[in-house]
Image (spheres, rainbow, N blue to C red):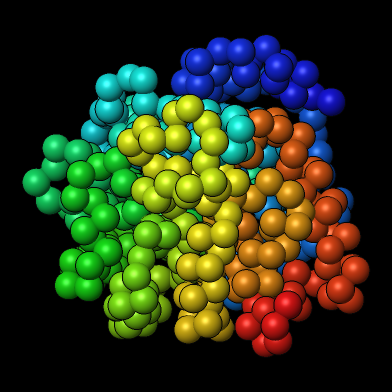
Length: 370
């Protein structure tokens, strides 16, 4: 067991945000970390539209390593890929504290962090100092400053800044904690966002290739991260709009946190405002994933996020249409050692159902009922 996992019972005694800060500081020291081979479970997967080659399909979601401080450390726990951020052009403190709550009885988390981060300059410096590993792609999740008059301009700036230093880019328009941000999921606003971000990505790619003097590795895939709180018409509108965006958009990450509060929640802080994640999000996020997959599988790479705390959960997302999965909240309760357990359990699930690869299981529930 790694030192961070051994320290987990002590860390959990701290208030939630203090616990996260202590964890990041400990990981930056790099003491007592494992060095788990991400290929050990023999579950490699290639995301077909983005051309990302992963040693395994289990990734770290954005929100844990907001400032790209510890991605090199987290890669040692066996992740197939990592995502840093969300980063905004300018540093911002986020919302007033307290703003992070453990729902221990429900294995959930509520946050209203508000994109607290050190800004693009710091983020890019950190990624330049520790470039993405060839065995563990590192994505950059970009967002908008709360005070910006033009949210889309912030995404354009983010794409330009992170393009040379990451393996892929995620455009996060689904946080519920920046007022007005989810409005970018509306059909007309989304069309404008995708048009302008597509142009920004093309310009960033040209600048990157010119700087290198060739076109080697000049293409970085881009994903759109969306909310789970969508009606059928919202899903139809997003499907239509992303189809019209052009080939620069590789896929969707489904999903961010939810504003819903299931009646099953037992924890005292269940009514705190903010986005709910963790186990209570699993069902809803998976159903939204399946709805998008039924329309877009084969056209876009889909990454399932929300509620994963076991190999069975990851497998369920894959069967629903995810090419890969991400987790974060479950680490609060189980530590980073959970990554190896999920990968091992997922490999067992694939074998038990006779699938020779992750790709073979993708969307299995769309082909025949589970």
